[in-house]
Length: 323
Image (cartoon, rainbow, N blue to C red; front, side, top):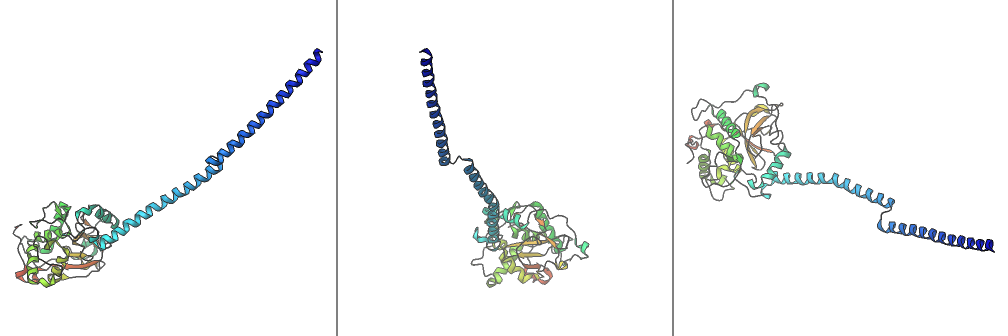
């Protein structure tokens, strides 16, 4: 009886164990199925995660590649507008270039055009067998001919490095620590003893119809506008080649105008390795005497040499200081 009772007890225990084991197996299976379902819903499945990371990586790479291109195109477009229509970025100032409020744009434009970067080694005219032209006139009787004085005056302005600022001034004369491209020219003429401001004013009075952009003469600003300087030098300067590769035709002290009266500078006594002359100018760039002709994208639209012996004596006005 005891053995029979023990056998029945063992049988019941075995059934109970089998019953619990089945439930455990079903619970584990259900858990696995539930986990899989959650994986699909949440995207935590390794396959989905891999696909997601791959897509994000591609988009990131695409953005990395396209962003610099887009920025370059944007800046290039701005520079084209800057050079061909400065008024788009601000009203024309005395120098014929956008005002000092757009200094950041000038800096970008100068950098892209190569202005302000080191121009490297320079050469003199003798290195190319070119004789330096000398004027027959020494207007201020200082022992240097006019062309040498024009060069020296421009060099002094470059060394002084006035900050680019084209504001209108009631006195007309900008202080020595500020200036624009046109100020390089009258300061160069001042060194030779000429009052370019008075000379431009006199010509405007005598030939008003030639200065088509002037609605009302203003002595405080007219001599600092590139468009007016071009009219003046077209009349009283000797017009020379616009081809920069004719290197023997470019001489220190010459006046050069760029674009649609956008910029002006003075020819330097320095040249690059090809013999192309450097230009002394103020566009707000760091290096004022530089290899500009080889780098600028602006067209050369005027090249003049001021020979006072060819100018009527009554048009010449002696510098007597700022008054």
